[in-house]
Image (cartoon, rainbow, N blue to C red):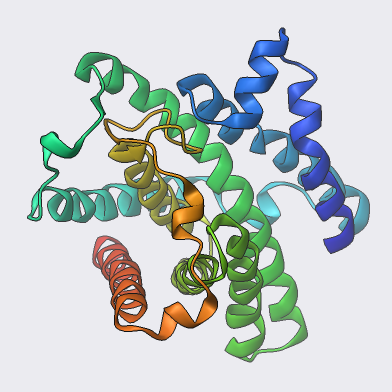
Length: 276
């Protein structure tokens, strides 16, 4: 299943691009820096998600809801946690330090930006839904069948989830920070899944996190910057290509502590929302 899904996931961008109507749209999709390109990249996760559901049926004889959970419980927990975590992230966003508009290259039209929020949330729901379906819905269940140990069903899928996010970074140090942060996020989502018995809370937390990461601040010309309200001037990503030992400097440790604290706050907000 792991090998088959990896093949499906790697092929899904090409399959999605095959349905686009022009060369310009294909280029924008692969670059991911425009509004269309950013949204298209996240919508393309639907191809991988559909492929996973087919594999689940072929290999295990299981259906979609067997990895999601009871539909009403999923809806309830997704809304509770999505709003609960979103409110806390909004509070943190309006606290200082504030964005200095003098440093910005662009502030998008507020009306256009607001109109894109529902579309962005729909695209992100497909993206995080696919990831949660595989890592928490499938892997967590499968490993739990192997062992009752949390190191097996909670930590191992989260470690895999974190390792795959290494490639999101610019250089070894940035990649390592991404990997540790993603593993922490995976652990939070795994805990919520175990507490509730469905994926609603994990999807809600993951969705709120990704929405705030995409919709508030971005850098011009960088991938996934197409729906951000505030855009900083373009910088060469190679400027952030620090060696691995940078993680253990004061700067790196502060970054790591900040990232882990943000995950802890979201997890606590989800627990409060769920009252569990």
